[in-house]
Image (tube, rainbow, N blue to C red; front, side):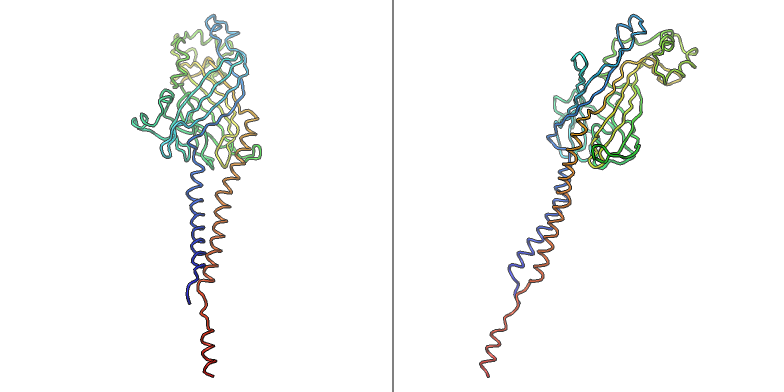
Length: 359
């Protein structure tokens, strides 16, 4: 029997479809989930801000030392400025708009993995060649998550990067839930530490380096000292020196609802406070609030982002499961048909004619 040419074609096409399914699932799909090289997106936040009144501080006007909470908005943009393979230089640019219309800028650039958004350490030579000139002044090495959890985020072992203290702060898993139809993991951050950001510290360059203990006692008596510090200061104030060295510290309390599939924070509710600190028994104890910023993701942003994630999830499901599955099924069907009709049957008509001729 001879082999059917059509069966060979069916076999080749069937195998090609099966191979294509593997390429889509294991090559094309991972590339679709990488951080895009042309990423440019933004998000809006709303909240309040209170701050130290410099004039009241200079006049020892304790009644007006801290301004009332003022409504503010914040716009955060995220852009990929350069890539090298699976490494990207990402810039986070936040503009806080105050009630008087003025803005405060907060810009940071990082090197991250395009696969899981983890920090990527760069050698000095890489910093010179990979980081764009416009980002060199704002680039900083970091630890922890700078802007997004990885896809399918783990419940434990996550840390968020805090640009004020330049530390990775543990994000503790609380529970799971739903937001706008999306399944989320809920995390909390509650951390504090000395301010290390040169940009932030520059704001306090005119602040005195020391304060008399009597001033701290007055702050304590006026109820201005943060509540968490009062018991410590009341117990130790008498033993402290008459003049106290000052430092600057920050506390960060945040709640995050993180999408279970994509790792994107759907909602962030954050309170970051900065303080003047004094050393007490080897610890920096906050005594004077400098500013408190409370921000949460704007409700319209949550709805819009949830819709985008649902659409992207459907597209990934089609590309990652249904298209490869369909190709495999059709490919196997072609292979089965090719096998069933692999050889042509040999014609017996000539033999029958020969037998008839002999009769």
